[in-house]
Amino acid sequence: DKPLKILEEKTTFKKYWEVSFRTVAHPNGSKVDYQLAGHPPSYHYVVVFPFDTKTNSVTLIREWEQGINEWWWQFPTGGHNPKKSPSVEDSAKLELSEEARLKDGNWINLLEKGSKGVMENSWSRNRFTPYLVIDAKPDLTPKQRDKEEENTIHVHKVKLEVLEFLLRKGRIVPSSGICACMGLQKLREMDILS
Image 1 (cartoon, helix red, strand yellow):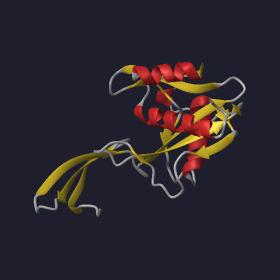
Image 2 (cartoon, helix red, strand yellow; image 1 turned 90 degrees about the horizontal axis):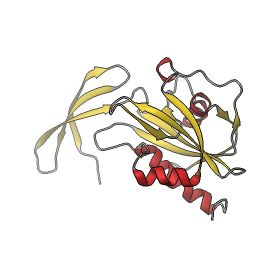
Image 3 (cartoon, rainbow, N blue to C red; image 1 turned 135 degrees about the vertical axis):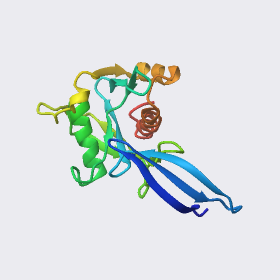
Image 4 (cartoon, helix red, strand yellow; image 1 turned 45 degrees about the vertical axis):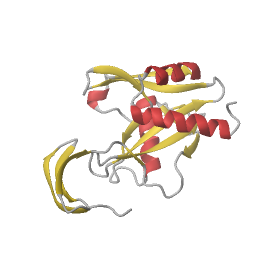
C-alpha cells in the first residue's frame, strides 16, 4: 500500500520532543488533521537487552517515568543522534555504557537486515531498533549520564524469571517488552535458552 498524501505539515513545538500537525488526504477525498510527536533529530532510538550467560540473568534499568510519575522497568534505551554516533549500533553501545555501565559483548541486531525500525505507536514519528548483547562486561569508564538521569536511573541484574514476571505484570516499558520477547526468542534459536 502506498502512503497517504501529506497536504500540509507544521511544527508547533520543538525542544527535546517535537510536536507537529499534519493534514493528510484520505483515499475517499477527505482531508484529516493529525497531531504527531517525535524525538528529533533522527526520530530513532535504541533498546538494548543485556544477557549474561554465566548467571542466566539480564540487566534492567528501574527508571522514573515522568509522563505517568511512576517507577518502571526497562532495558538501556536512548535516542540515536547521527551527530554524536555514526551508526544506530554505536548509539546502542553508548546507551549501554551510560545507563547500565556495561560494554563490549556479542552484539545482535534483532531486526531483519534493511528494517527501518519498530514503530513506537501510531501518532509518533519514532522508531526503535532492538539489540541483544550477550556477556557484556563492566565499563570502568562509562559515558556520563544526562543530569536529569543521575537520580532517576537504578541498575539491577535480575534472573530471567523476574523479567518474565515483570512482563506479565505489565511493568516494563513497551519498547523494552518487545525487545525482551525478540531477545528471548533469539536466545532460544541460539540454544542458549531451552
